Image (cartoon, rainbow, N blue to C red; front, side, top):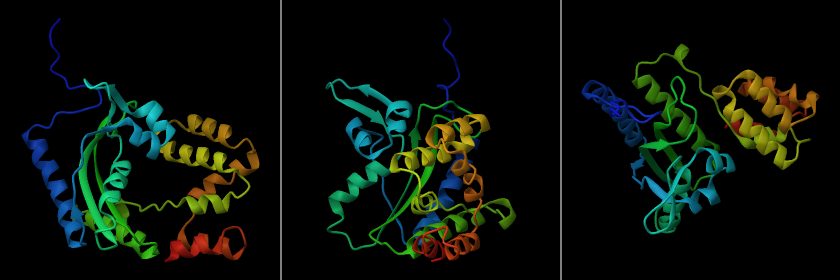
Amino acid sequence: MALSTKPYIGSRDFFPDDMNFRNWMFGVQRDWCRLYGYQEYAAPLIEPIELYRAKSSEEIVNEQVYRFIDRGEREVAIRPELTPTLARMAAQRLQDIPRPLRWFNVGNFMRYERPGRGRLREFYQLNVDLLGSNSAMADAEVLMLAVDILRAYGAGPEQFLVRYSDRRLLESYFSELSSDALRKVSRAIDKREKIKPEEFEQLLSEACPDAALRSRLPGFLELSVDDLQNAAEQGELDPEAAERIRG
């Protein structure tokens, strides 16, 4: 059988012209992160599977992670995300490093998902984390950094939309749901743009059988900052959660 010249499914080759463009994109990200005072770090591509079992969602561990047994009979995984690794690394140094801690990483990850337009199994991602601060300004800082990076790419305000996610808002807006149902709804929201509308509706139905509650979700996902404030004033939302967004 002839050896295929194509890369592994869901991954891609970077020829010199592609690599030049990728390096430019990553360079812009690194430059802006450093301007904001963030320090770059790197981490292993492989971690013990126990790390993801402890720190990642069941969906990632059971359905999306690339796992195998190494020659030492250890079960390991190719990293599907960086947050568990960040938690592991920060735990080693957090007591010795002045807070807040500002770290960033530009790296590649792998998830066993169905490849689609703009979404491959191997993907590259900028991770920016500010640890050791509960201030709403910490969230705002990361959002401002993201906006500055997009502007540096030449994107105008009409070409991108900033979306803010805070689970406390979901918990406040749908206080009738159990914690387990909220987790399932949150998981469905995360998948919304990756699956067909009917699949999204099916996930929601399983997570929240109450049709009246489900009907409130589309409106919730489109709420602006001003909408959140109005909802808080009308008693539909926890004022503290809304105030945090207004920052």
